[in-house]
Image 1 (cartoon, rainbow, N blue to C red):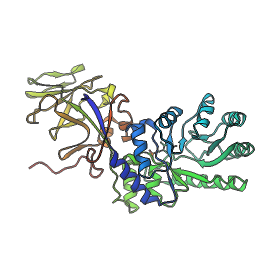
Image 2: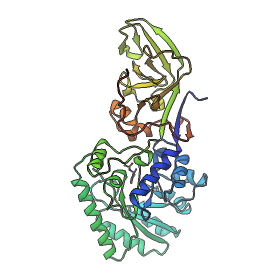
Image 3: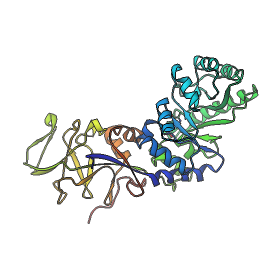
Length: 392
Ligand SMILES: *Cc1c(COP(=O)(O)O)cnc(C)c1O
């Protein structure tokens, strides 16, 4: 028995892939991103769940993830979206992973290596992160084409401002720049068979712009990229699309204690009880990814009821108020993220409380926290997060 653990609903992950398969049709490659420990869901189990449900490729960030997946026997095509050190190029090529390129030095090294490699050019369309302006991209494409062991398999770019707004003019301009770049590359004799630009938000919002591959991220895990994306999808007639969140995060009561009215709780004496109070002490803290900004704001679920966090989140402990939760006992199961009874704490709620986004909430759950695969039911539904009718 672990003091803190996650449950990862394998059926939910699979369901989300099938939902996107229906959305994009049979011909578009689905390439869910499993970077960041599969957005906190556990790299290998998430990868397996996606592939079993019909994902075609997986996107990873770094060579360590390529190794971990290959060691686990995952032989699906892997696409590295992150930088590869020059030193790691032979290993990546040997493992057969595709990689994105945007540096002359990288391509020069690959040319010299004389090992087969399939490359994807990243085009600068307005994100100003990775990516090359078109003239440089064309020059790099020439360099790749001239090396018989290298293949320019794809061309990619990445949206800067699609999930953060319902005004998609910037994203539309990026899309237009991407299409122009592809046209120029093709006119110069580079077929670039796999074009890919869509992330979750684009996959949800723009059915006609998915090209040959979709790099699905947060929504493969059953989470909407943002409220704005949900609004835009609803306006586009896809409001009935249901994603299934897959992650639940749980702990157990480590102590139940009575404290008098007027007692301070935790470091900094930031909370004072206003009535005789029962506190439950929980063995989870910011070390585990329970953000310190959740101090005095968040609530957890115990015995199906809400228990507010009192005082500051410590490194390995929090205190919650269970005065109004009957019969709380030592080692009762507590839900930090997920459903219990008829109530729910969503990643969006935790993100709002902590001043961040659902992406960060799920990804930051500590790597040391065990991820248990489960089938069905553990995670909250995505509709009306946090709302339920008042108790009679
Ligand atoms: C992480 C990532 C994605 C997925 O983004 P979501 O918003 O989570 O769908 C797509 N493309 C690239 C290059 C990424 O790094």
